Amino acid sequence: MSFSQLLHRAFSTTTQASCAAATNNSLFTVVYKERNLKRLVEKFKKSSEAYRFRTKSGIYEDTVRRLASAKRFKWIEEILEDQKKYSDISKEGFAVRLISLYGKSGMFDNAQKVFDEMPERNCERTLLSFNALLAACVNSRKFDKVDGVFRDLPEKLSIEPDLVSYNTVIKAFCGMDSLDSAVSVLDEMKTKGLKPDVISFNTLLNAFYGKGRFADGERIWDLMEKNYVSPDIRSYNAKLLGLFKDKKTKEVVDLIGEMRAKGIEPDVFSFNLVIESFVKSENLEEAKQWYNEMKKCECVPNKTTFEKLIPFLRKQGDLEFAFELCEEVFKRRFLLDVALLQRVVEELAKASKIEEAKKLVELGKTNDYRRYRLKLPELPSESEVPSDK
Image (tube, rainbow, N blue to C red; front, top):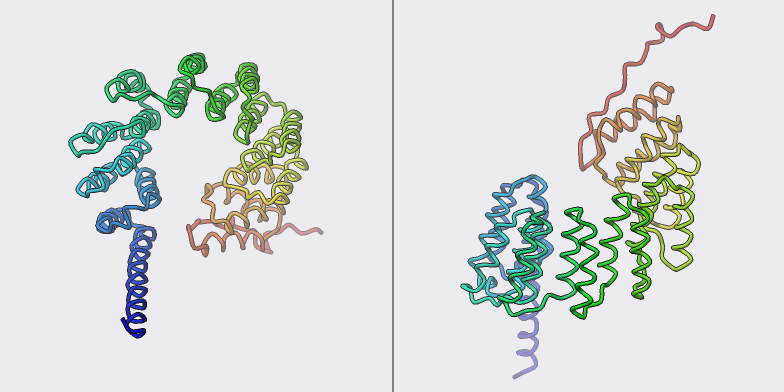
């Protein structure tokens, strides 16, 4: 083969690959950018004809999440049932994706159907799909189904539940508020030669601390340490929540110091709990200080941060900082209750901070993600303003 032929083949291959990549990227873009949900369903089904599209689980997660948020369950069923016509359905990983998506959408019967149909599609059912079905029970809050799946299927499928399986059962008991039963699962795991991990203990910690059973949470914490499982950020956040619920603001701050001493940096959930602790105790300066600490640590505030701080700042009369945070809301494209922002506009106007109030009204109109119908309150005309004389 001549050099010119080699070059031609190389460039032809590169061009074909580039075209294929461009086509796939355009498919993803078309689906991601579609705002109309009915058209989204049609475009998703059309895009699914491309094998490369079907390999991207993220776009499936995003699309189903959007439809579930809008309670369009029929459309979720439409796009997921449509996937069964492809040969991918004979692969366990693809079937597990559908089971998981149905579970996260609260559609357990559909998830069960996918699982039951797997043998007739020549798709092997292993521990992977068993765990997916178990998780679908929990995510759909069909806790009454968990025991049947966990006790009956392993023998039928000739499999042994693993750590993931037992962690899911713990989560189910916690979801039913059967916390003592959840703890008893740890004993059963031990008889099976399985060692609980940080997920096992974090699930229990979240349940006990979250329910205000702080002493029991501490008992689980001690048990975690006895099992040589190191707490992570989720463990500490669960404990912070317990302290917050007990209104132990000083202990909340102390625990942040303990975390840092062990090399665990607080995340946005941690900071929000500290901030809310000071909001509850009406300590304006400390609440502001911890917000600034969050920014200094390059921890990005979330929607909850602003929902807690802005009304507090307004009530405390710190309108300047409240205005700054409202600007930040628009900058970060957060969706906040319009009433929350409207009250800030009204307080600014009442305090003669007219330019700031006008700016928020303008941001409500001109931002590129949501229109807020903020209104300036009617201001008294000059003739209506009482004279100092």
